[in-house]
Length: 321
Image 1 (cartoon, rainbow, N blue to C red):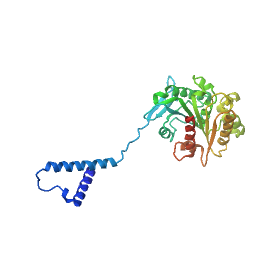
Image 2: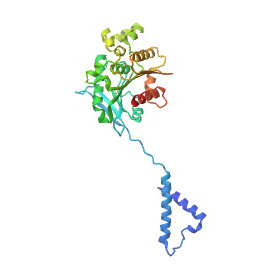
Image 3: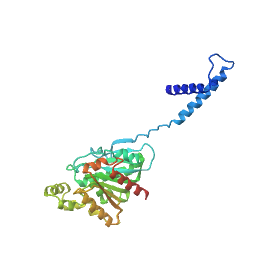
Image 4: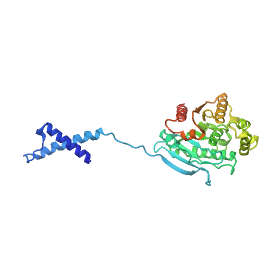
């Protein structure tokens, strides 16, 4: 206000210098109220023009954050999720994120740049925890994730989301789990849902879409570790996404993100991509150049990140159909 008063005074002095007749006389005149009215009106007009010239700065409303929401009853230590949603609106598409960590570590808080990027695009972002190996089997782990998806479907509208527009995504171990939940219908079916409830799937740099090939080509020490985690051959087939790809199953569209040239994740992405395409399912892959396993994940959400751009292009394309 002080700045504007000084500015207005300066405007008046300049005006007087150019036209002395408008100056206020030092001695009282016969009709001073009229002069005061004229000056006041002039000052108000100038002030109005100054204010009109200044654009209003409106801050976007902060996202609404809900932490540690249980998706089972009674509440389990690891069976919780976080929800970050736009402050306003309803029927926003939902991104359901599954963290990585080798099925043994990791947390739903490991989301880096993703929540603000998705919320800014009008998505509700859900990040889930799940029980970990070796406390539970990977099959049980997948069951936990299916329960979390069911909870998200049932409660999406409470947080501004659209229960009919859920995208399932995940990194590393979360990539295997996301691809599994979107191809092996038994997990969602156990929760009263189906593959048709999933709008799209974005696994990020997974190396176990085809477990049989992964183990066959790995060094014995690595292969034995996967056998330890995934169990016998029957169990491995049940938990291998590529084994469940088939026509007519309502498998959603896929975008497989991977590190270009990575000796494990690159060929695994292409094997699953081809299997999906051969079954008539919309599938594409994107290889991130000059990247690494964690770098690809950490960069998702950054505006100049190529994988992020490919991901949002995929999401936009699915939503427009």
